[in-house]
Length: 507
Image (cartoon, rainbow, N blue to C red; front, top):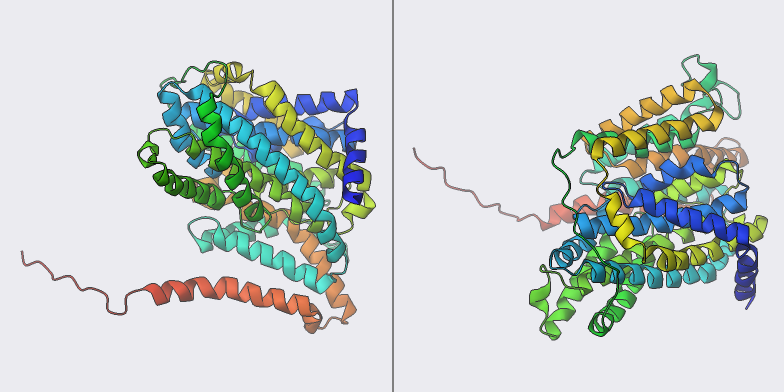
């Protein structure tokens, strides 16, 4: 009952005309940027992060809630109409959604994606509201050694699970941790990795890093693979669903939500696995109804389930972010950076230190989710026209607004130079297949890990054993070792004992 009352208080704060205006602007801006080809929610948030400057923390987070859901919705529109997913989690939506669009059912595909996103986002946000306070109360008891170990586990999982290569994941993490070290040492005031530049004494602003790596890097990468011919945009009418479409969609929406939320709350859980599982589940269940042959040709269940799983996973990421201060996705990392800009420290005490802010944020997520359905669904034909913007003008605009946003951080030309340097880094890591999330996680969590490690060592008079002082810390270190050792052992065990030797052909 307390949770319900707190959530109602959050609605009372969020449902003012001014806050509703910021939520609506966030939804429209997020959709505007998210619908552009090749731009996922993380890049949309990074690009629009400086837009929230000048607002107070509450209004800024309300706008971010709208930007977040708007960016998610925009990504599904591009996947369905252009077969161009803005992120890997939208691949399953693109498979069936684009086939539906090519068969003249783009409106139905967009509608089931939007309604499914609304249902999954609403259920997921309510679960966040009811679960997070309990986890945060438990997490308050966690000491510095255990906190350090949990952050280490998150980094190891994200670096070793994401991407095709563990080595590339750990290279990305090492780059991020190195960037996080730049600036003055908090204890000794010694300059670290500044190269004698006074502008780097306070470290590099996370906004500049995020905009450079996500927005500039992604824009350069996409522009480098620019298609010269105009995009073939499928026309779309007013999104609607018939009775049969509703009957075939409601169960996949719920199953997708059940699959997506737990994965979203896990480090390295992500949205890719639940969307894939949802697609496979719907395909298997379709056999019972004799519709298996529709998959691959435009089955509405193949859009409804994965899209719900994607959005439920996006809601689940708020559990570790708000309860532990752990970002488990690239989008969560940008949200964490936004909170840090306002002096908000996500973690176990956040819900007790900033209760009004957090419950207003949760209420805003529900409001933004509803606005997304009410405002954006009727505007789907207009969003589709955005896809006709010529690519050179589009990416020139992205580069301009990214530079403008970075300059607004400190009105310093030095920030622009740093932005372009990180844009080049963002392009390079994509070129060499290095995942972005470990890098940005290292930048954000690195300094916090350093603080917790020093706290643990101070308590033990500098003894390394201080990092193992708590049973929870030891348990987490065991998980870290298992995460590193088990996958190669299992892979080795699965190899055939006697590999087949092919006979050499005689020329």
